Length: 260
Ligand code: F6R
Image 1 (cartoon, rainbow, N blue to C red):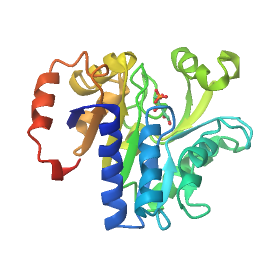
Image 2: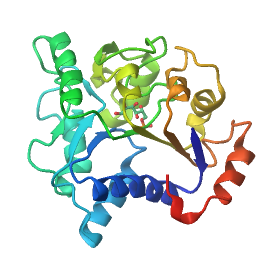
Image 3: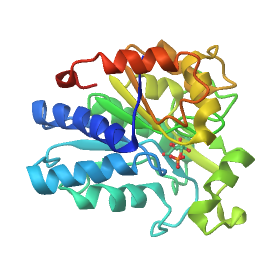
Image 4: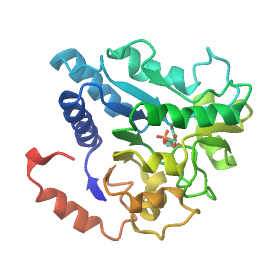
């Protein structure tokens, strides 16, 4: 696990750089995209590289991490719409190239199984962008999630619903109770995972992810078992790390050309 503590601008550049390197070497790459606030600076940087430097996603495919159950197709907070709005329609993904679990399916379990199959059929995810919840969730794998789980229906914790009420004009009742999420086992199959987190509210979750025991209480800690994870955090999110000075000196000594 590589942990980089830097400014938000630099974190966004590093993540966008990893995506650019992948997509330029393999234009038909498969990306895993997260919603939430944390990845937005990465998406803005990708858009800038698309507009100013010709970075193209025309042959790429993308899979979102999760989806609320029951939000109407046109709802602005439906995650497929969020991803369309924040990144897909701002670059040049081909129509239909961005996929999400179907939170409106009549048979939700079948939709989850179909989603895992679609990821496999696409060849698996090359690079997965992740955020992290204040309770240590990745995707919507809340505390207590099976560490081997596949895409499935989950019930959101009250904390996650309260955290996400900001996207629903502060109305907690408007936040759905259920979601479909890639499982931890699904996420672990991505070949490179890039997790971004900023702010003091994420410090406990980052401490548990990087330094805690691997436990379903802090689901993100399963990433300790992944061979290629990059954790991009600012000083505030790093504030509980015992190894923060080591991570800072390691990054300071890293050749600039190396990337993540
Ligand atoms: C989003 C997702 C969530 C968020 C997490 C952090 O698709 O699956 O795990 O990444 O809740 O959200 P932000 O970045 O808004 O703090």
